Amino acid sequence: MRAGQVPDPIYGQRSKQRRAHHNYFTLPVLFILISNHHTSTYAQQHGWAGLALISVAAVSIRHFFNRSHKGVHHHGVLPVSGRSEIQRG
Image (cartoon, rainbow, N blue to C red; front, side, top):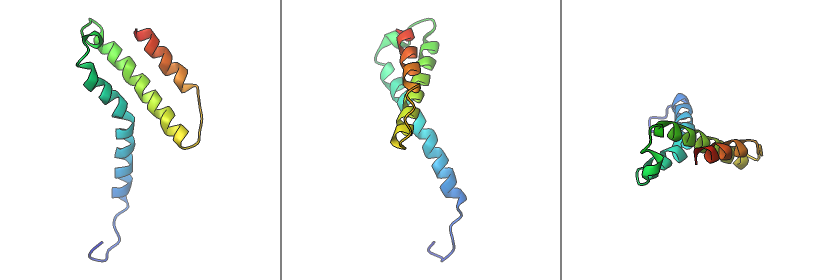
C-alpha cells in the first residue's frame, strides 16, 4: 500500500477463513484448558470420548451464537448440544 499498489485480496480471504476456524474452536480449547483441573473429565478409560462429546457440544453452541448474532434463530442446535452434555454426566 505504501508503494501505491493495490493489495492482493487473497490475504484478506485467508485471514477471514482463519478467524472463522478460531472462532469455532474457542470454547472447546477453553474446556480442555479447564478440564486439567478436574480429573473426572479425563481420568477414565473412555475420557477421550467424553472430551470429543463435549467438544462437539461446544462447537454447536458456538455455531448457535454465531447464527443468532446474524439474526438467524435456529433453536434445534441447543437441545442437541444439551442432550450430549446430559449423556456425559
